[in-house]
Length: 352
Image 1 (cartoon, helix red, strand yellow):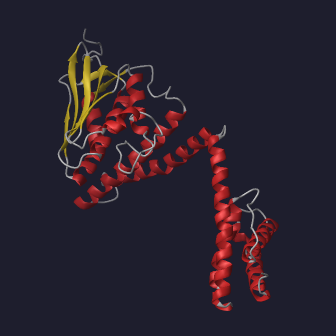
Image 2 (tube, one colour):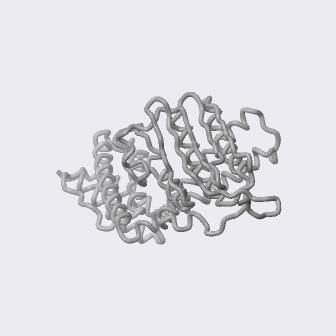
Image 3 (cartoon, one colour):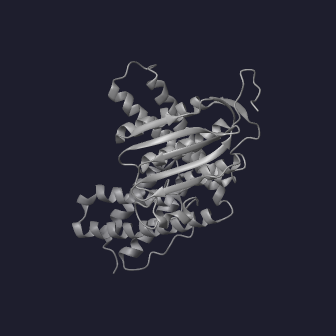
């Protein structure tokens, strides 16, 4: 059934007004002619659907087409008083039909891009785009926490601590994605360096403490008697931070203990133990797999993607060890690994 001439005239006038205001599409279009052509295509598809014909799918879905449909919808709503209610509803339904087909086509295009040769490059680009603003958030939060912008109340300090912890966690996920795509070859440098175990533990504590306080959990950190060691402090910090954050996430009551203890011969055992709910047996076979799917909401996983534990395992293996997990339902979970971290003498040599 053909559209009433008044309705078609109203739709055309809305489109003409958008062509006149074409600069509102400046992000998605380079010329008025481009906007006019896209509007003409979308109006034709709206009319087809309104008159009972198939609107068809766009051959080349674009951000401009989606933006055009969005503004068409808004302008039709703004001018609803000019048409009988049933005609306005007819137009809006037709516009929604066009929007739905655009979204479906856009999703297919996105999936083709993700599964194609450039899919991994796209993932890395997105991760890089996330890290830039997150780095700014971390810097600003740290600046405020140090009082450089004026004194803070205890409540503001706690809230800023949570902001910092959340931003740091997101930044870590972005880094995990990049490293995983690259194969993890650069996760651990070849050269070892002298470092303080206490400083590594303090760094982890500073980041996760706001999370523990918010949940009312106790945190315990313990290091070896010989503090100065030689190894890979950056990788060690990253593993302990990921495991501790994970432990806090799945612990409702009790405590989380982070411990680095002497194991003899210049070795130490690193462990993170929690009093959480434990890991179900069904989750164990895929626990360290990246991009795994949860069988149901709430399943045990470091994150929806499972990147955290996968990266932890790669880091531990790159440092020459193996990540071990012990768990019991309703009792808790313990992740551990042994590292050779020879003590450093005051002169910079190594104890035998």
